[in-house]
Amino acid sequence: MSGIYDLASGVVRRVYEKRIDAPPILDASAFPNAVKFTAAWQGIRDEALAVQRGRVPRFHDIMPEQAEISANDGLDWRMFVLKAYDIEVPDNIGRMPVLGRLLRECPEVKSAAISFLAPHKHIPAHRGPFRGIMRFHLGLDIPRQADGRPATVMMINHQEKRIADGEGMLWDDTFPHEVMNNSDHPRVALLLDVWRPHMPLDMEILSRLIVRGVQVGMRHRGVSFSG
Image 1: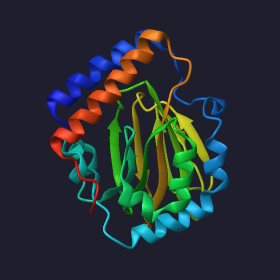
Image 2 (image 1 turned 90 degrees about the vertical axis):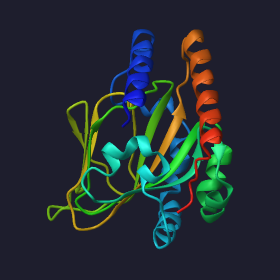
Image 3 (image 1 turned 90 degrees about the horizontal axis):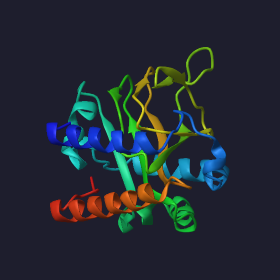
């Protein structure tokens, strides 16, 4: 990541940490609509696998400041973005109608993407900048080890977490986290950024300003989410 991005992210994190106390793994009740996504996981998976057969951009092609965690080992981390900070990507939504319908039903979801990790890809430890959202992670096509356990390992604040196909997890990505696909097959997962409920008023206002600022920045830079 760029030095400026790192510095700004650190400042924002410290502000939120002083006002919002949250554990790394969050109670699923904070995102009641998660059940809609888990119930539809097979339909979402089928759409994601169809998308995978086409061109999907690497994460650092969309956001160059993420090169340190996306281009670190020469193995691909590709992201098919349907929504980014409330900016929809109509062409991509059109390719995933099941997921697109759920996103329309759940306005608290601010960003949505399908994440494709190449075999043996390692995403090194990093931290998200913004505690105004929560991260929901849904397994769609998760490789398995010989013992049947999921082969993709997530380390979240030094805790090992694994999710299988159709399993979801709500967590706070401002804690240090890394991901390892310890298999010979790609890993496919749905990533959602969900608005954090019941924030203090000042953090609610700041969060809305940050979202608006990111929207302005993406439009100014002409960010493209196509392959």
